[in-house]
Image 1: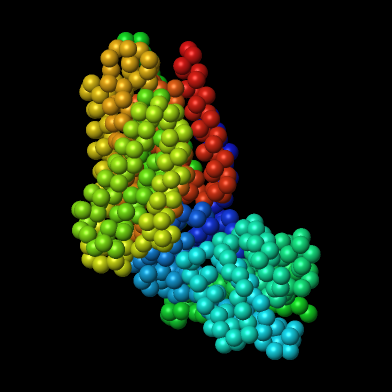
Image 2: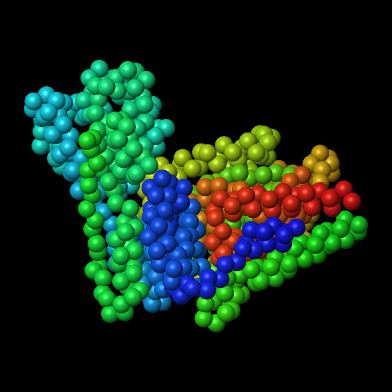
Length: 299
Length: 321
């Protein structure tokens, strides 16, 4: 019975006759919208390269699992390894072993403790925060004729670099304007469901709110829903970060968010650099590529 | 004598399943693109696989004792997390030596287990409830100890690096499991304590009237499980070079699955260490081959569920025969 079950699941062996190269992407957790979009983009990009067999391993938000999967991948001696590390400390060693085994290794988005990679591709959350801060200042100037107003900040998980940087960047800008007051600040751990009660609390405590700055789009959307229920959504500008086509971009198009700031999926750059590494043995990538964000605003 | 031979037949059946699974894994394994060798059978893969499973398998040894007494310990995942964090704190923040840190971490696990055992024995509340409470409470304690932060060891000084390099080695992790499995099997088979454990699960009331030291035995099995979960936390910290307050979340379910898979009955009294070792191997081979084939993670969960149900149904068929 065990065998039958096993056979039905893994029986569909597909030794591809044309694929001569193996590219493995170790994804830290498939079960997140940003990650799902990233996987999809990678698959689209590699689909145009029939000579490459592209495989995604799902680390399931567990550092031990991701380490084990990279070890599994190394057994197959891939021509290129791409890693989106779940946790910077935990993944450092195993990535070092991959590099030592001569496997070109691209590290995505999250820096690890030692430069155990061929190249590191990421985007700058502080810069994204700064863009958001500048957008908020302009918005308030338009609304009140001068840079003043009341702001609610809904933060991502505390202690996580992305949240710290998105906060720091925005407040590097906002702190220059004493007229802009933070009336409420709460963490919603990146979750839409948690942003709703936090926003309800903010609404109850503050009769006047001009702007909600949330560290990602789902939280901005959650805050919007809470305000809408109280009939106050029209008075408030909601601003998010990430700009996924299926979330932030859609919310902006629907007039729910004023703006979102794209956190690049890094997939396009990773494939571009990866292909160069595969095709040209003499190609030396830079040690780091920093990708620009862009603002997605209402037309 | 009848019970004895039944147990052996069960073991042979489990071994048969294990062997069949090994052969199946070798057949469906992806092959090395150059040499054509099945990747599953490479030494590297087999030892990778055993190392991955070692922490869960070590805890499962203690859980076998607990389940033999007709108890359950839901707190092992939280104890694992607590010990991983204590170990990392001790190395990275308190700058204690590797030996002291390991001892502290294992002792923290033992203390948690002692607390579980004492409450179960003295208050006579169902172990499910006591250990559910400690699963929740210990997770809170762990997170507050490290302030929700991950504590990295790779950059935390020579002693921390020495610890990582020692305890994450394959011979250490796999060797500890093998040694502890032999020890646990011996304790269960040849010592009086081992016989008490079985007797307690067979019939707790009769054991009490027969003058068995019921309470001390209960305290001991939960303490042993705590110590083993503490050791598993140490190994996890070494393996991930991190004390992560979320380590071991849901690990209790993996541990219980291993024990049940090995034919130990949740009703107590029936089962043993050999079965648990086989259960651990079955689950780790399954996880490894599904991983090598890169089967979708969600599908893996459903397969795991199916396998557990099948194992329990087989057990029931045997028991009523």
